[in-house]
Image (cartoon, rainbow, N blue to C red):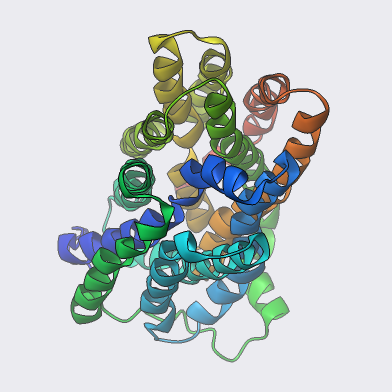
Length: 390
């Protein structure tokens, strides 16, 4: 726990390392989609299903993980999650068929779903008065993983082939072993005797409208984010980019997003939330269009700008929801991360179906307008209630 409103740096670092480890392996999927498409002769719908399965598993698991994490002091979810992600996603290069690939991806996604609510729910207990900044640093760990992970796996597969990518599990196993030594058990929220429905009522109570509004905005953000991450690799593969270049593009998107999240979290502690959402969403649309229509180096610039602005609000949604509903932070985190990203992921195969009918560029250009539409919802954020929250 924190003392005198100071953040516990050691614990925040350990929780961020968990986030990095689990998401590092989850980041392998998108840059390898062109490789999977070629190996198993997949349609764009099937490609979208791979990306969607990752998010859907989070949708199914995270709210229930959040429910139990608020009740029990256990490290099973915290350490078991990264372990599953390491083993099952790290070994996708050895799978012999598309159904088994989906099974491995789904199991690894369950692993990523397991640790997110527990770990995100612990941040507030060790952040002191710097919740926005600490949540952004935690988010940075995951975004950094999605930045370096694609480069790592793209280089590994491009140099030695998909079959030898299984060696990638070794660093993850080492990190999980270190985390077993240093990570504390989570604090329960004193809700052990409550059922799932009563827990929702106890956690949200009269603030459910504000939480729901934030959640809807986060779903729309996640949908745009996941659609671009799933189909930009396919688009650039068709245009002759190398696997390493595709990995670099995915890394630029997520790395810039991690920087945007830290900056947004720092500014939110000083300026509030609504204005940051306005700027982020207003600049997302032109940045995403630059990814699609920029030539030469401009596509890389658009990738960095698009990731920066689309992903910047992610930690803010978590912070706002936790402030509105401080009782049951793991449950709230599961809704803002797992459920929001899961529902956004459910729609990704639909994007693939539309791309088969029209084109990837046309469909993604339409999705680039979604952040602008979300601005109208941001105007109703309960800013005054958030300012009064502890």
